[in-house]
Image (cartoon, rainbow, N blue to C red):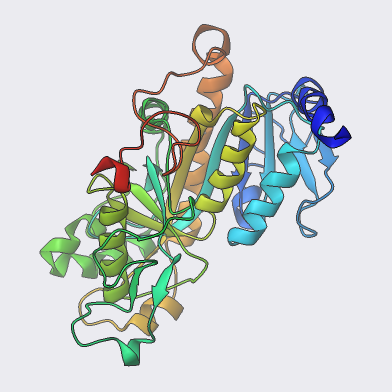
Length: 361
């Protein structure tokens, strides 16, 4: 009984004390974090706050002074991301009720949509790994892939049962703003990256993979498995379409976003986070499938010339977004950017009617 009656007081404490950053940059591992250190725009190493429950590899949240901008590194994959973000938002050391969350990480990229070193902003994050799976050597003859949704009987169907983390939709009006700011950045490119793109021009459907890097609006897929190949790529393209009722366009693959979003949404349910202030930014470090004539193994284990420019572009595009939020705080961002679309999970946990999932059919 004491725990129940004390809950409002606990939530009040969480939302009223501690540093109140305007922007929290969420990175997943050291190279993504390092691009934000020792930059000319702001010093995110001015304050270093140790938070219990963060990754043992990344124990501190780094902040400017004053703490307009902070940065946390979750550790890679879904468990690390969910654990770190949960520990952070419930730590009581930050007031995150008005904070914008910029997920800023590298990802694999679908050459049908974009190319290495491109920067992408997603509306949908789809947990493509949360499915039934057959070993590739035992796929039923009528199945195009070994993956199919839980509670279903074949690929191409909606899940028969939902856990709630399969799809998240974020604020598209905010995404469009972030896209516009990021599009003013001069993106980095290298001769090695250009050479790596060139073979993708041999197939018409891969033509976007052979172009120069730019800023793109497209969606992201989450899976703990770091995979490679045409068949898996096509399977997860289809999963993204099906799970979002045809609205999502899969272009990047990463290991954390649905976990991060689930932790943030749970915080939003108790008023300590505003889920309408989440931005999903991923730069493309490698292709998710080989070019014509290349093996999946060579694509996965071969050189990754897109990695370095993708890191540079996380900073170059991302800093435009961060600076805009901080500089235009009083005139635009303090009050929030009102969503024009549904935001949240398949259950409608934050209110509203999902435009994906079984109720949207």
